[in-house]
Length: 88
Image (cartoon, rainbow, N blue to C red):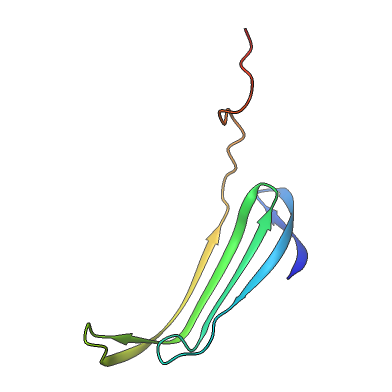
């Protein structure tokens, strides 16, 4: 865990960087996930799946895959969230 500042759409977010550790197994032997979380919520998640073994429904290995998935904040809605007081 560390702190980093990320820029998204011209705005800076002070984030806590969280790296998830997965124990090696026959199926998941290359999974790494990292989140950047600010007061506003999740700003960025990078998931790396390296050497993940695909199996049949009987558990028989059929091949390995490598993937990288990026989930990134594109827009932060700052309108009415239901907890502000309405004006009379």
